Length: 74
Image 1 (cartoon, one colour):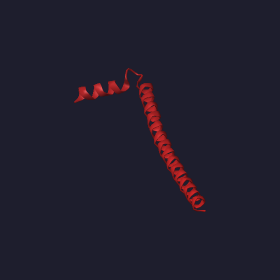
Image 2 (tube, one colour; image 1 turned 90 degrees about the horizontal axis):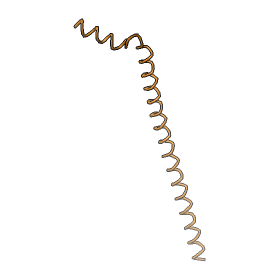
Image 3 (tube, rainbow, N blue to C red; image 1 turned 120 degrees about the vertical axis):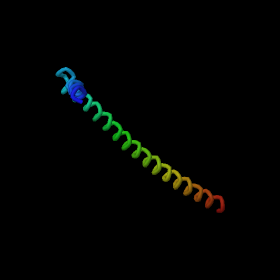
């Protein structure tokens, strides 16, 4: 057990460069997480914009048909 604990400590210390190495891994992970969250937010925003645009287009199309029908009947 002692040999395993020493090797783990040596691995984490990485020859006295562990602070820099683990900090860079942490920053990289943070950037990936933030990019993932930002992407999900942008995707959700885009979906809502598309849905509202489709609803607007549907309403305009139905009102245009109604106007056209009224014109044809007259």
